Image 1 (cartoon, rainbow over the protein chains, first blue to last red):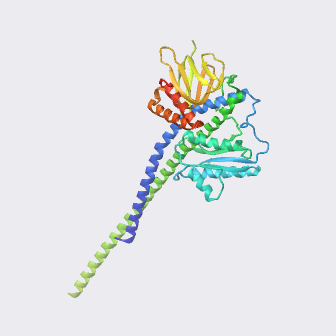
Image 2: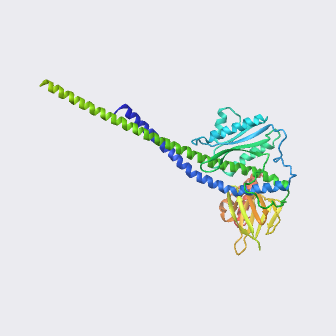
Image 3: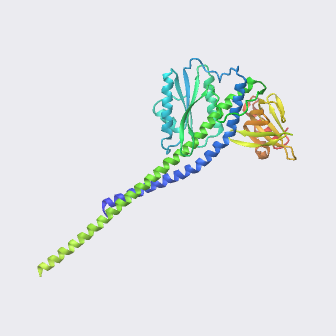
Length: 299
Length: 135
């Protein structure tokens, strides 16, 4: 067997096993998207209700001065929560987020605000440690199925640094929003000081005038941290679904590319094999002719 | 008579929704009963409280253990936003009893163990929601 033929056989074998791995990853990711989407759906009612409640309180009590709603006059430091994934194999998912986070960082610096990164996901953490950047906090191990307690832990740390004397004055969040199976967008949002996000549907009736148990201040005190938690939780869930979606897409194109490579290599291998056979035949025929000529010459 | 539209939701899922005649919950100021045409209210719920939803019409009451969260009432719509909640029928009684005993043991060992006190409160609420007698 010719050397070229052997080489091609070996390459086909290795590409084929790569294709098997990427195909398996693709299938796993597609089954997990469904689960992640269901969890996203399940979290919607709570988020909707809590947003309604916060809007209700804030619109009723315009005079409320809660530390979480008041913007500092001269902000000097901002926390940036960057939500990345724990594992790779998901195309440009993490690169897109980190690029957006860098852009936000230089924007903040331009305004004289020092950004402090808080990172979720192993990929983002290694990115920061590799560059020797200091992180305000880091969490990993749950990027593909976050639970509410993860969000609570992150929110607690962020709110603590926000309320500390020499802590941060703003909190931004950079994460990926799950628009559809095919589109995921990196979004940057400021979560503190609070800007209550209006729901997309306009309320058809004016908001009712609430009574508070025990008082507006106390309700706000416990409502706002929950609201921040719920915003972070929803960011984590969206990011998890987006991670699976982009992994599925990346793995699908990897499988397609591998199959295309296998096709090209098989064709080359067949050509090499046929060339070898042709050569052998012509050698044999040539040899036989030479022998026949020699025999004829002797007679 | 008009009915209340009730929704019990936790961050991870919607636990129950439906119609009811009356909702009884425990806020930090004390118990509050909500009936149709109640004025809009926003209340903070206690840790380890029990929520009762009287469904009326011959249906049995819905009882749930609710740990922290809020109650919001507006236009005959009652939403219970619980950090953690569990329907009485879903409570694992043996596990809750076990948790209560462990919490009580650590309270006896250390009077100021706030975590254990909280755990005990939660376990009691779960047992009460499941219809067990708790001392």
